[in-house]
Length: 434
Image (cartoon, rainbow, N blue to C red; front, side):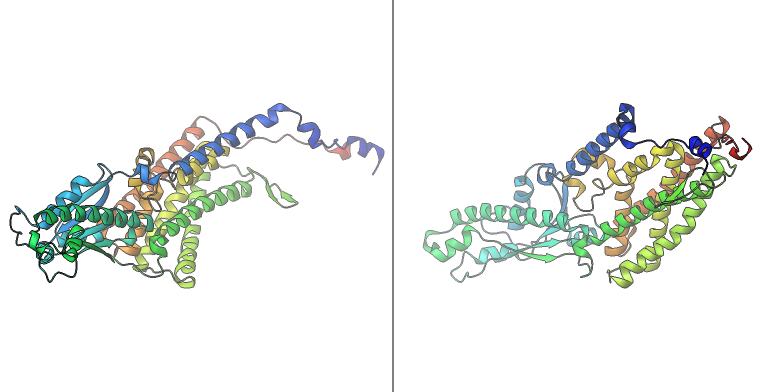
């Protein structure tokens, strides 16, 4: 190397010198701070107080009591118990649905209620028997759980129904004790009548033992969204590098390909084509890993695969549309749309009835809630349309159309305004001729 060559080599900048420029710190600091604060508030805001936020949790109340009425009573004890439960429950926390037994079974099987409280047909007769000398056993109410709605939601319903039944039992017990003739007021009878009802808990709509206590639907949906989100961004970066619009750098190896003259609209079309093809592979691998290798309980496999592919594709196309519209910050925008706002409003781990109203509003359109309902219906509720599957398909179709319309509208606008990505490169001097 000659002295002239050494003199023409540019001096390498030092990090300490570059780092003194305040403008270099400004944008990353502001953006990182805002993202950190927003993520913290969004994630933690939905989970810190589920009991305090509980509103209108749907629980079925079934009165099968056929009487006959006890002497001096205007109605059966089942009717009294039902009225007491509905009126004594803390206002606004529970939405009691007074149903027939068949209606209750249908709503458990279609993910409409989180649980049920069932009053048996011989309830009044059994309680009346406690007022006789032969009374030895209290009648039972049955609490039914719905684990397919998620372990926390089912636990909420079970706890509320048991507490309500116990309180109602004490109310009825005071009435019966006051009416008990003195000659029959032995200690055993009074003890039974003071709290005349016992509560047993059973599974109302069972799910498989390899269903994660009702959480596999959430985690499977989360994987669908993550695969669509991460895969979409990988495709976006890979296509830009292959077309020469960004550098490819892996470890110490750096390459820059010749720039291919292509419009923004055609670039988006190429990325969406790759997304459609690659999602076929990733969706199939997800199902093979979860079901075949891990043994997850899953039925309706062809339908589950079709729903999974459609969901992953809708997310992937949405990522491509957002990246095409927002450019460099598109990944942050799509992260908020598909992850940050979607997770706490999915209703999968914490019921939507137990989160603040802001998250219930988000759940109307955020994708993860819709996809969770669809996956949950397929895995736990026999793929019933009214269990959330029809809503899932509908929102996938809407998301698919929005991605196409928004993405192509933005790229066409940029192209017509002449905002092309192709920029001429300066010609470097040939040092050999100097």
